[in-house]
Length: 322
Image 1 (cartoon, rainbow, N blue to C red):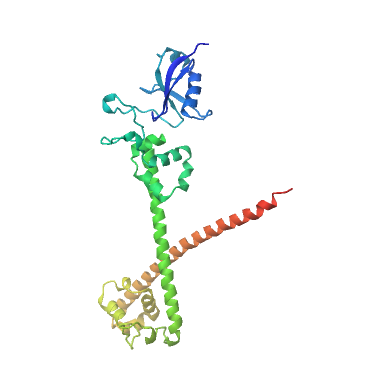
Image 2: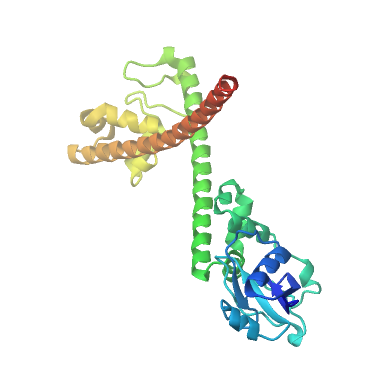
């Protein structure tokens, strides 16, 4: 057997390049994989580095001149032309990194998202373990460079970035919902405490007495409504959107006849107000229920997770001996 033909091999980023001697195409693949650190069982495609021509025929391989440079590609990697720098005298570019024109030492600086892209390329499910900061780096990365690093088409890389942005948006919405729910629960707890302290001073129709009224707030003795509430009902457009849940409930509970006397309105106008107050109160209750549902779902998830862990810890000793 001859000593073989002198060849050069590189990976798809052109960052690694080695010289090998190979008498056959199969031997070139074997030695090239060893030099570039590819796994022996990985499917490999051989192309010409300069124009991407696929080399599959042994006779064609033998016809090529010595020192021909070959590129070894994994299954999802694609050939792309090299980017000339410095008038064609340097080929230090990595396909997934655009070199800065003004950069003095571009070869030594690597974008932080490149490591994340490499993790995704090896195992797409690793995205589950990434932090929000990592996801944001991938979202902000240039689509063309990300596509090259992953071996994707640019459109597929853009779709991936849109999906990651949606994940970040959902996490932000969940965080805001939690904060709103916590604020609501604190408010309810405070109101319950105030009602317990002043419950003995409540009137027969459910209106809190003067003991619980904050300083500076006057209550109309005839109607039982606070002066501010009456002012909103009589003088504001869409008053139902300006009232508290307690005020809305009070208006709805009183009914049309009682509110006609309080406001001095006719039945049609009073009925319209009560319907608007009832609809607004229902809408707010639905929002609260939705937030509570989110909180309950997350709590159940944590309980199931802790329950599974507990079951595993109990089962392991049981299966240890026979």
